Image (cartoon, rainbow, N blue to C red; front, side, top):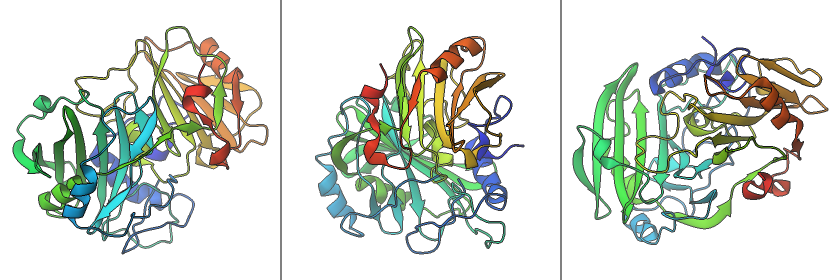
Length: 367
């Protein structure tokens, strides 16, 4: 079984993983990848897979009541296209990182907890065992995007005076999988999904407190280190990630140092009736889509080569210094031809991946 870090850079159509498989294999992956430093709140939270900016809780740890007051004016239910409007924050031992992914329907943020290891970043084989594990993320949906009626078997709860739903079940290889959905604004829902090896850590109460702390941030447009000069007719940008891959594959590899991902659909990706991010917990490729990944060569299991090379369902291009890999993935009966993927790659202008301030607003990068 391939490492989850190779999802976007495999030499064959990449296998897909459920949440429990991603978490379980993280310990194996962390013993086989390069060592890198990390920032953690409280105890050292080993992470096995991407490099999101270090999270600093704004104003330090706050009480649920304080966070609730800040959440009342959340400007996140109808943000401009591909704009981040959610802040990172901390409530007690749990913290939400700033979002790393934004689509036409939602924003995605990793969630961490003191004393629990999140295997989303590579570490050295000589590092100590990780201990209890957590795989968790926050999805903040636009108004009308999430369908709470599809959360079968959930019990009603209240979060910061608003209606919510929570569900707990045993997961494969995990002691508990919790889902908490709540209406943070009229018709707009957010969801915390948390899979833990500890039965009551985090507890249902901790997740409700964390949910109550949801806060908005000044609108920040998503930026990418590439410009696309060609997009096949009919395809529309539906999701973009910064310093990560798109969707839940990006959450599983949130701190492994990837640069960007852009997901396109034909027709456009759905913006209503959702219960999970696009591709679901298994991170599958949706029919009629293609994804562009921009990643460091050190994260790839392939060797740099001149020109453009294609295998089944994907094509690669490398930067002139062989330090950056650009890959277009499009699989299945409705996937793009190698000729079309090659044309996309041939018309990409690569910028300075090491300097975010030079990156292009994604709405300007895709023409």
